[in-house]
Length: 295
Image (cartoon, rainbow, N blue to C red; front, side, top):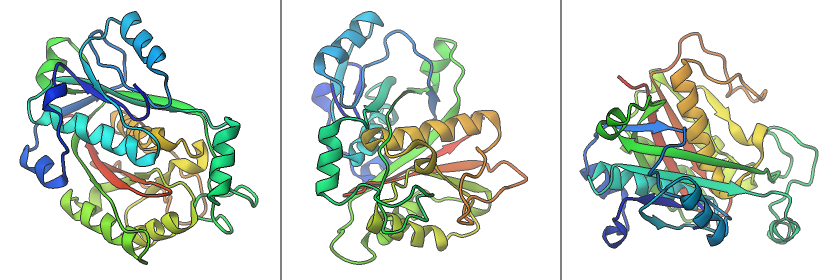
């Protein structure tokens, strides 16, 4: 059970590829996000050995099947998306989705250096890095996704409502590909821009971040918080981290303070009704999740 893993109760045989159209067809039932550990939550992780993932199941009394995604930032997006889709379709009631990343592994630093992704200049906001590049970070993020009836039966207090999760895969060989896919995902979420904020998992990698910045400029009235500036790049855990921070902000009724001088992290007087978590992989894969307060 490695990278960006999601799981659901006894539904392994029913797992199929889920595209944005299928997710939309599930309707919009309430999904609750609660990051507290509970019994019978199903294991998930990234860069975790199967032995360690098995230990998680044993120690915490977890049961049920699992699904593994690994190797890149898009794994975290798809893990969340498929777990959400299984709950939305009624195939499952609860899932544990998570990821972890060790940014100090020398072989990873070498691998990214060979690809030209590592930050070489002085550290700066992901929007202001000369020549681009990301600074690897270390961390682990795990979220409990469950249906509202299931949460109510066990007396859990949700942090936020996960309304929808969508993903795409642009052609990075053509200019504007990332921006175009992001516009399509944004439109599919049916967002009210005057009452929305964005938590982006932007990495700082040159082409991907430049095109995401162009997309954000087209929606310049929406306040943005870039988590990569503060946490670094956590690969598969990057999107779950953006989702977790968005959920915490919704539950507390306040955005995290701006952390860069790009002009995107503007202060706002009223807490937005919705937050969109955005993930754009440094190599490939794009995704969005819409979060709102629990009614």
